[in-house]
Length: 268
Length: 284
Image: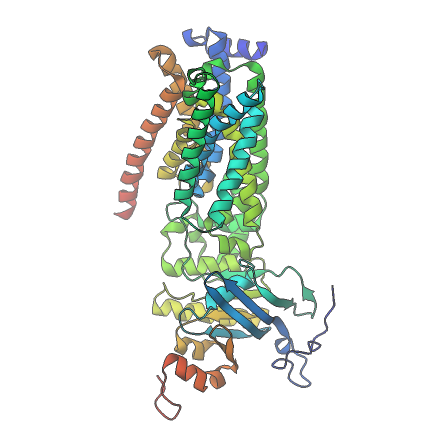
């Protein structure tokens, strides 16, 4: 295992501003030459991407551009070529990264008699939840919910009976324990009302500030991307353009993909 | 065993406990039903009820292979074939060519037909027809010990792996984000189901084994609101149906397995109605 010092990743130009040694200037996730092939053709090819600590990177692109496929590769759910490196904020390479994942629409069995407490405690402790939830684990689960902006009263609710906003918060709480090396948000707001969306994003932003956690956010809503992301990458089978949010959003590639007016015109 | 018999005589001084075969059956039911109640919860969670049914059907081919190889104890040939069968089903499903239920259906009917053909070719199927409905009354003390071992093994697996089973049953991607290896868990679970089905098929029967796996968990789902109550209900319903069905079958002179399943079906209907009523009350 190679020890990597901050600023020593030679092939990542976007991070490490000259002289700055703060955590946020160090690369956390480096994707190099990633490709995914399926039976019906090449889904992704030559994907190169850096995500720094404490960066919220918006991954944008049209439908079928491969955004979800990239997330699945990061989760290790599908075979891919190329390399993905994770580096902790201490600069050490992480072999088995912990990934927090908040899926778009969680497909699960809504009739399953599983309470929120069951789900969180199953993740927290080895004590089998069919025998019950340990008091300590339940307390910890309540803290996790609180961190994600939800109350402890959700613990006894069935997962299938939650509202869209409640489910998002439970999934966020679940994703944040243990503290992940990377947080993946796959359009987390599609089932949540407008106020809920803002609360959710503010929460994610505060987590970024507090824990210097790198976040990859897949979103269709460009106004959210502008408002909450710190950087953006346009994906269309490969990374077309990436960088600071404003720079990417003003680029010709993004305007073409989303049919936006030229920068002189009114912004949507 | 003598000690167990005397305990039963003291605690349950009824007509149906006078015979040793009934005592054996009673103890076997007390061991089999919690097993089915426990494992059934995850079979229903993972939507694998069709899969466990197919494993039951494959047992018939397993017996036929045992007969052809000339062994007396079909347990090993059944277990071997059931595992092969399970691996085959997973592999074909994994290829993504056809939908899972279609593939399982194909395997299931093939397993049954192959068993019937092989057994009838080797000298009359009627000799083995008892495997179709099973006969709990023929259970022997050493077989009861085997059931006890399986119960211990299931409890061990449920103690060690349950949380991971649960998380991977919610959603595969979510489990993957916690570094839970779904594939390995799936294998453990399939082996467990294959062992359970194989060991108990002689007494429960190919045709009803799946009802005993699915009905208690399905009833429990109607009323449970957490994993603990789900398991408590499932094991409770399973044991109640088992004991009540066994006693009823004695007095009615009916087949024990079928009577047990019918009791479980009645319990399902009751819990279904109870769940509907309480659901409506909560909604109001």
